[in-house]
Image 1 (cartoon, rainbow, N blue to C red):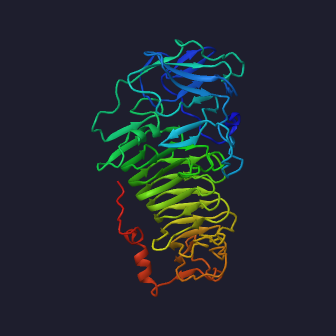
Image 2 (image 1 turned 30 degrees about the vertical axis):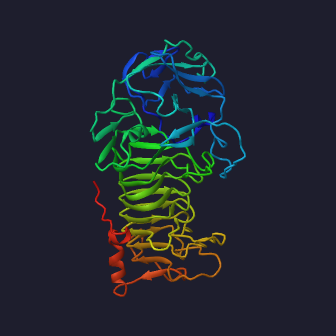
Image 3 (image 1 turned 180 degrees about the vertical axis):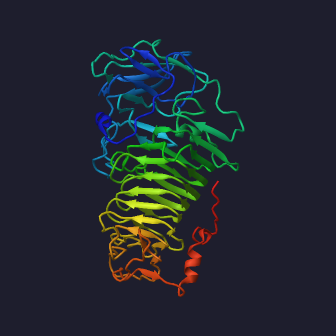
Length: 476
């Protein structure tokens, strides 16, 4: 947990606008005595230099009106079985240790109670502990945070840091809300706004995210007719350090290793911002599980399995970065005018089931790593029900490529199987210079479509509705 302050290349938390100096130049957000604070606020302390996170002590929040203890963060509790994201990716169900946990979107995640970036320490209260129209007091034990000169000795008096939340949330019937990290809008956090949005709604709800860095785990379930839109593709950044070692699998429930994920959604659109997973390993930027999902003008920066898909999705004008198996594809996905960059290894592991389409890419760019990447691999899946996914489908139409091995596809492994239903297809594949690539070394289970022989196939696969089960996406 302490080493989080040293992770290079992360965007520092934007300075908050309402501040109050307390003890040796440490600024507080929300300011002491602040009014109209959003209940989903983080607690942010800005030091003159980078502080150090302790291994003991408590952060407590009390409701001053009735004296209730609202929340406690105990720094003696470890964040995770692998707090630096570099341990085992397998769950140890015999482990009885208590770890820091937070309920996000109805699911239990391990999390960091404090993250330090440069000289800013952000304290993450447990979600949904604060309410509207209440006054709260915050105390911080002397061992929780230390300034470099040791002049900060915590906040131990219940009157030293207080704030009052807004009298009420968005009015009933409101269909558009805004998120701003500095507290100037309806919500401070992306998760706070999503938690507010109605479930299984018949009417469209739009969440606008202002420019800023939102370092938070985002997860939600069973939302519908929801648009999440960033103010700036490059300057609105949602991310978190997470992977399958930091958040290993539960016995039941969804994968917890993504920075941003959702399950059971319908008619969702995310547009115009960046999602980054700051850890390497099995670490999705985004996990899609829903029907009629639109991903539009996004930057997705993950590691292994950087994007995992279930259901049906339309991805347009989006850039995806990953470290191998960059697309883990269970779903039917139509890609258009998008770029996939794999730093090493195969671009995808496509796990299409019988009766559905897989990844279809129209007018896209694929860049592999070190010249030895392939478009899709089908390793032996240990003889399971799916064997090595004999119905896998990945179709490339008018794709520009770089860093791809001459064989193009594979490895395709396992015992002999019927490849009749295997669709590893490509049409008019080009180099980054626009010149046709050499197909002569392509693996024999792939197929190179040509004109006029395959014009009808190319026409069908160029139509999103054909790939996505009759759905024609409309980007809002």
